Image 1 (cartoon, rainbow, N blue to C red):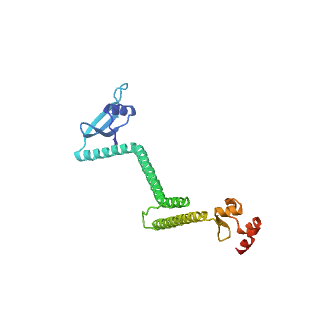
Image 2 (tube, helix red, strand yellow; image 1 turned 120 degrees about the vertical axis):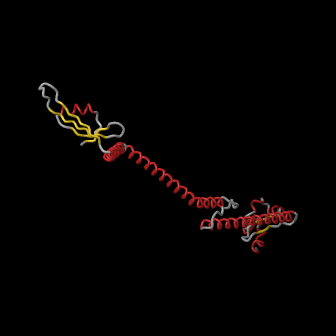
Amino acid sequence: MFLVPQDTNQLFWLAADSQRAYVGLTTQGHKRLYAQALVPFANPVPWGQPWILQAWFRLPRQENRLTLGVRNSYARYEKLRFFRAPLKLSFILTLTLVLLLSLLAAASGALYAARRLVAPIQSLIEGFRSVARGDLGVRLPLSSRDDWGFLSHSFNAMAQKLADAQAVAHQSQSQIERERFYLETVLSRLTSGVIVLDNELKVSLANDSAVETLKAERHELLGQFIAGFAAWHPELSEFVSAC
């Protein structure tokens, strides 16, 4: 028995050509199955075509319902098998796209995390470069309380101390310059020659009277050892020896 919904005429000629009996199911009307039997037998007329006996048997409702269910299930199976390759390709493409998106998201997350990890180091390096250039006003942001936050706080404290020390040095230098200017002003008004020596006995200051007495240029005297004056002026040898 075969579930083949073929046309009766086709089945008729098939049975006639094959000279074999045929039994199968066919549909007549709306969802109504019949058992169809085709039996060929010899024509009494030798030159005539073979005769075929055709019989129709209506299936009971229960067998009709079960048979239709089997046929529908088989049709759905054939449909799914036909679309299996496109569905498989579609699933592969979808999974590949999801995998690529996942890899892209993972790479973006790793890059973002790496930037967040490297950002404090870059800020610290830029801060040290600014301090090396003399910019002591640079400060690092205190965005966390971890080790990087402690380093940023330490760097800011160091930069503040350097800035304070630089301010004190500038104030001291300004005070020294003011005192030096005051001393030069006082010495310039003296008629006697005055020479100021540093700790190494080098000339650090000489007024106009001393320059005229020694008959030398001011720039020639500044920075010279007092011991060298004895070669220029022998009369100063006792003074040089006393120094």
